[in-house]
Length: 471
Image (cartoon, rainbow, N blue to C red):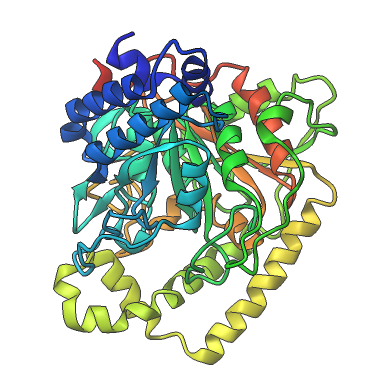
C-alpha cells in the first residue's frame, strides 16, 4: 500500500487490517506521518505535530498484538485532537499568542478514552483564536488552508481537524462545536461532522458560553464517526451535565433503519441569505431524500427561526466578557475581529444578560416543541462555500467588523437547544468546492441522526475527486 492509500483509509479498515495482521500499527503510523510531513507545509493545520510520541505509541500497540492480549477497538488507528483540549506532554495554545507553550500535565478525559480504545494521537490541530470565529486563521498560526483550494477557509474553530481529515492525514479527528465548529468545517471541506446531543460526550472542564459547546467527530464517512462515538460517549463524574450511557452501540446499530421519517426541510429558516449554488445543491439532496421509502417530507418556515439571529449575536458578544483584560493589555496582538466583539460586549449589562438568557430558554423550548411534530429537520449546513480565509465574510457578502454568523445562521440554533446535528456532503459548486447538508434530530436521537446520515451517504453525493493536496 502507498502512503496515499493509508492516509485515506477509514478507521474501520485500518483496525480490521491490523487485527488481521495485514498491517502493523508501526506501518500505519509511519506511512501517515510521512504523508503529513509532505502535505502539512501546504495546509498548515497542525498546532503541534508529535511524530516521536505517535511512533512510541505504535510500538506499544504492536507489542500488545505480539503478546496475544485482547485488542481494543481502535488499536493502531490515528487520531488528532483540536488545540483547545489537553494532551499530556503537548502545549495547549488555543490559537493565541497570549497563551504559553507549556506542556499539559494530564490528558483530557476524552483523550484518555481515545487512548484506552487504542487510538494513537498524531498531534493537535489548529483553531481560531480562543475558537471565537468560523474562519481558519489565527494570530498564532496564520491561515490553515482548505485542501480543496489554497488560501480558502477550511471553516470554523475546528478547521485544522477538517483540513487534515480532507488531506488524508488519518481517519479520526476530534473537534468542538459552540456555534457550528464541527459542522461548518465539515461543510467547507467535504466531510462528515457530527455534534451530538448536549452532554452525550462529556465536557471537561466546562467551557464558557452557557452550555452550548459540544465535542464531536470529524471524519470522511459516517461509519467512522459512529466508531469514534462509541469511544467518546458516556457520563463523566467531572461533568455534571453529562448524560447516562444510552446503552447503544453506534457502530453496531448504525445500519438499522431510523424508524419514523417525518422530515421537515427549510432552505433559509425564514431569514437566512443563501448563495444560489448552495441552495440548489441542498434542494437537490432533499429531493433525493424524499424518494426514500416511507419518508413524509414537507417544506417549513419555523416561527422560531428568525428569533435566533439577534439573540445569538448578543450572547456571542456577552460571552467574550472574560477577554476585557486581554484586550486592554494585549489587544494589538489579538485577532482584530475578536477585539471588536469584546468591545461591543461592553454595552451589555448584567440585567441585559439575564434577559437574554430568559429569551434563550424560551427559544430553546420552541425548537424542542417543533420536534414534537418532526423527526428530522434538513437545512443547508452554511450559506456559502469556502471563501478566502483572510476575510470574515465573502467579498460579496454584507461586511461587519466581527459578525461572521451572517453566513452561518443554520448551526448555532442547535447549540443553544442541544439537539444532535450533522453536516454531510451533498455536492460541489461550479468551482469544485464542497457543500454540506445539515441533518438535525430530536434531543437524545443521536443514533437516528447517524442512521439517516448513512442513508444519505449511500446516495453518493460526496465529492468524487480528492483535494488538490493529493495531486
